[in-house]
Amino acid sequence: MPVVKVPKGEAEPVKRKLKKLGLYDGKRKPKRKDEFVLLPVIDDPRVHKLGYEVLPGELPLRPERQIYKNLESVLEERLTVEELKHLRRYDVVGDIAVVQIPPELEHRTEDIVWGLRKVHPFIKVVAKKGFHEGAFRIRDYSIIWGEKRLTTVHKENGVEIKVDLSRAFFNPRMKGERYRLAQLVKDGERVLIPFAGVLPYALVIARYRKVKITAVELNEDAYRLGLENIELNQKRLKGEIEFIHGDAFEVLPELPTFDRVISPTPRGVDALSLTLSKAQKWLHYYDFVHEKKIGEFRERILEECRRQEKDCRIRIKKVSDFKPHVFKVCADVELKEEE
Ligand SMILES: C[S@@+](CC[C@H](N)C(=O)[O-])C[C@H]1O[C@@H](n2cnc3c(N)ncnc32)[C@H](O)[C@@H]1O
Image (cartoon, rainbow, N blue to C red; front, side):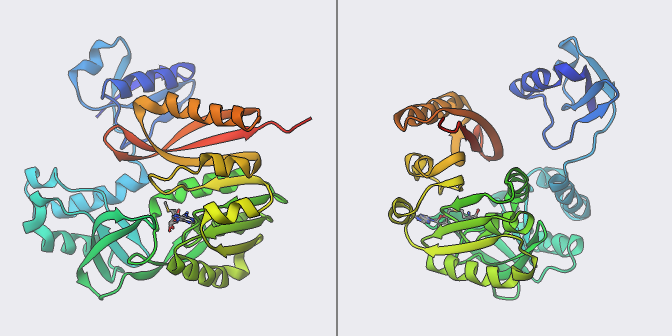
């Protein structure tokens, strides 16, 4: 795979341009080299017509792609090149491998299970995932191999998280995002987390920071698992977590304001006005946005800030792909303190 070599100061705009042209290889990590950055690109003749310096070379895969690549290499023994193209990303949650099997590979299910067990010898369950459903965002799963259970304990960012995939939402791909937020939080802050699920954000933040967290969740199964998770991690936590079972739209109006509010908003729910009204210094608001509508999303937040007479600065970060051209994004909204 070729790489494009650009001076450090030009890396971001060139990366954006390459992405726009569909030439950037997001599976690999860019690399700093002295005063230059090497950007990963796909093998396409158009790369050579842009006027940049193009070198041969292979940049390392991102870690989440690397495990996927391992499965691909193992399966090369059993699947055709054409079939391998249909292989999708998968997740490992505790000792459960969660896979998507597209119709083109249904007849290869046994081989895929074989490959997963070879790459991850410790897994005890392989589950095929369906879609997220309802307000509680629970996925539909079918177990295709192993023990008949969807409960497990997942380790992440130095905490243990008990999950039950059949009863409560959990997304292991947000590991990096949870770490990012934990690093932004400062000791002594009061933090509010509505839509808290089984408490992954609260646990990771309390693991690293001496803070007081109030979390709110409506799904009773997620709430019970969250309480178990506080117990399970008690010895590791620097911070304290208060967990409230209830509807965020009813509970939050009764609560005071907080230094920081983190809203892992369920898809299709508009909690912007509610969560902003509870934030004093920071709001981290998650939503699903089409790449062409990021400007509109920013304007919506600005408008809400104006309505609530809050002076704010907004940075929007793409957190993960959701579907083609639609991203899960986080708006980091900094609120200027009143004089
Ligand atoms: C996208 S999930 C995020 C869960 C968790 N923060 C995580 O990242 O794993 C949204 C969560 O909000 C919960 N939820 C949905 N509507 C709610 C409401 N009105 N009040 C409180 N929680 C709600 C769902 O049950 C679900 O656990």
